Image 1 (cartoon, one colour):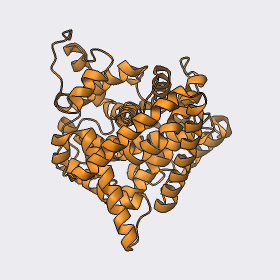
Image 2: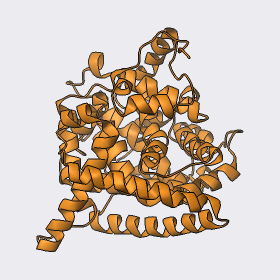
Image 3: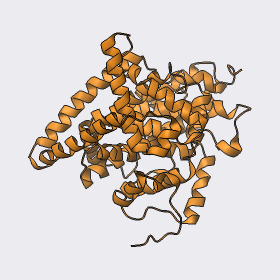
Image 4: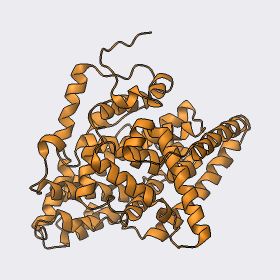
Length: 418
C-alpha cells in the first residue's frame, strides 16, 4: 500500500538497517506532511522559559545562594524556602503539578520492563546507539564540544556514568515520586540544560544561523527519544521482545520524564506512533554529522574500558577492554549502519559483528519460554534489576560522577565568564 504523504524519507531512514526498521517496525505511515515538517522548525528556536528564568535568578544573587534555594525546594518542597523568588515558585509550581495523564500503574510497569532489559540497555543501547547515534545530530555536538564535556576522553567516562546513574534512578520502582532520586535528578538535569544554554548563548562564536538556539526544544526532544524509542528498538535488535502493554508503559514513563525536563507538550510522544513520527522529524532536520561528530564518537569508544572500570595495564585487563570495546562497537555499527559508522570512524570487525548477531539469536530463543512460562517474566525482571544495579554501582564507583551537576553553575554565571 502506498504511503499517503509525498515527502521522501531522510537519509537515516533510507539506508540499511533503518530502511528495514521503518518498513517492519514502524506502526504505519510515520511521515509528516510538508506543513508539519516546516512547523517543527519553530522548536529549534525555543528554550525552557521556566528553567531559564531560574538560571537568570541565580545570576542576580550572591554566588551559591540560588543553588542552595533550589536544592532546598528540591529536597524539602518550595514551602521550605523562606521568601522564595518568584522564578523558583513558578518552576516548582509546574513540576509539582502532576499532569492528568500520568498513570502510576504504567510507571510501575515501565520500571519492571526497564529492569528486565537494563543490562542490555546500559551496556550496549545507551552508549552505542543512544549517545553515539546522537552524535549524528551535529548541532547538539556543538554544545558538547563547546562545554568541553564528552569531547575529551578524560571527561567521557564521568559524563557517561552520570547518564547511566540518572537512567537507573528514573527507571527504578517509584523513582519518579516527588522526593525520589529519579524525580530530583531529572530536575537537576533540566537546570543543567538551562545553565549550558545560558553559557553558550553568551559566546561570541555561537552560530545561531546554523546551530539554532543552544539546547533547544528540538534537541531536548531528540534526547528524550534516545532513552525511549532507541531503548526499545535497540533491545529488539538484540532479540528482546516487548508486548504492546510493555511498550506503552515505557513510552508513558519517558513522556512524564520529558514533562519534568521542560519539553513543550507538542513534543511529548504519547505512544509508539508519536515517537516514530518525532524520530522522523529528528532524522530529517538534526542528523547532519560533521567533524565534531567524529571527535565525540572516537572519545566515547576510546573510553568504554574506563566506563567499565578497566583502567590498569595488566594483560588480562587489556584483553577484556579490547573485547568489550570491540563487541560494543560492532553493535553500534549494526544499529547506525555502514555509512554512518564509517563516517564516525568506527572499527569494522566481522568477528565481533557475528558475535552480536549470535547474541541476538540466543536472546530470541530465550525469549520464547520467558513469554510462555508463567512467572518467568517476573523472574527476568528481578534478575535484570539486580544485575543492572550491580553494574550501575560499579560504573559510579569507577568514574566519580557529579550527580548534582552543580559544576555547571559557574559556566552559566557571567561573573566568572572569560
